[in-house]
Length: 387
Length: 232
Image 1 (cartoon, rainbow over the protein chains, first blue to last red):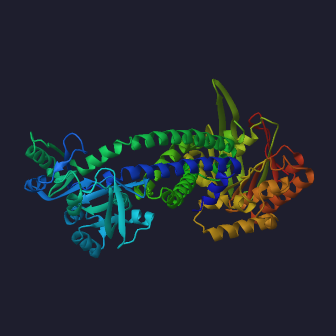
Image 2: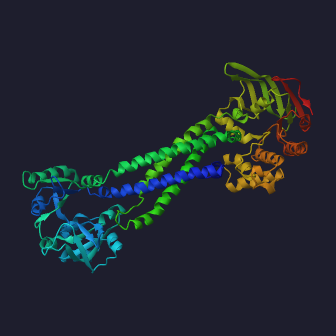
Image 3: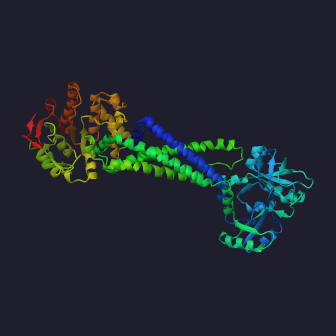
């Protein structure tokens, strides 16, 4: 702390130059924070995946339905402790742009699979006993202003009712949410009771979309997956079973490899910052060679002067990085609001902060080390005489 | 004279610089004693080696041969780190071009040597204030160097040199950049520090008028002392 005024004065000796450099670092880290948030949001499904959950789908395509009768057979596989089915409803609400996932599920079985969801006990009970019941994610409910107890008119693009109508109506009996922001992205959905749905739909009765399988031991997941696939081998409806995380990653990659895209953009950004700030630091130290010589004259050791130059680079990155990340965090509520809940919730988590700190430290080291070593080697007599 | 302890003892000091393949011997076997409380003016033409000798006395450089003892410490045998610590505790420097840090206020410039001590921030501020008061600039403590005149800058530099209460003041052409009147003011200040505060002063100058403020003069020419020290 005692050297902070000295560092500060050195850093802001040329205010305009330092402020411009600082701004470029702020922008780089703000961009980093925002892009990381997008990446985390895209991968939140995978991150929130439970290693003990497997997904069983039709072997060749997830859109191929599977018989509901498979549930009992999967349940019999050793190591399996729970099974639930889910079916894609293909919903839109009010107009084409208000599309969101609606899954037809067995309330008790399905919710048992996802203990990470936070649901009021009364809502859970109501969903289980109401055949026309529906449960909505909190963000979705907030987005459309839904309240528990109201009717929920939803159109399906896939499933007509027995009377040929595509318009369905459910009773909203519960809200589901999650404490973990990464999980919250997975609650942007509506669950409906499969008992009512299966009875009221015109076609596809007795079929479901996929199975969620809970196993007792995650290390046995591969073996259990193989056993389940073996059960239905050579049948009309062969299956494919894989860990939930693998499934989620594969699903996210259908949109594009967001992680690789973000990484490439950030490499370009930080490489530019490295060149820019590295040049500024080198120039700044070059201009202050006589001042560094004076510090040495006054008794500052070579090591201390080296540390001061390095600390200046660290201070620059801490300031720029901190303000940039702060700006990214400050922008999150506005960004989340502007997406209207159509996108998983964006947030800057502890991992992103840690990564930002690591990048800041590495950049500080890369731009600070060359001038610091030059300061270390500086000979007082030569520097004061202008050599 | 013999009753006064010798502070600086220089024996057979040589200094050789190398510029590529060229070997330049700047000092040839210098012997010099500077008693504690003395005020010595090192005089001589340009290139005579007086600044080199001053740098060796102040521990800014090390001799090629011979020995330099300051206060019973062989500073020619100290490592770089030890020499830096020694300078911090024992020597104050005053240069021709002041060499203040332009981004720091006068107060902060004076506090610089105290950053290397264990003193609290409040104590550092107090001591810097005392040093600035001593040089007559306590009202300019918050001013940056560019807001001060040359004479004031040099007085701030003197305050910085004395703030850690060193035994030895090393001055390299301290009035070389000042007009006569301001130079006299600065020299009177240095003389006061020598006479009233007991600081031992070694000053390089080629200005005979400046040298008159010293107790005695030492002449160098082509790296050799040309005569015995002369009382001023």
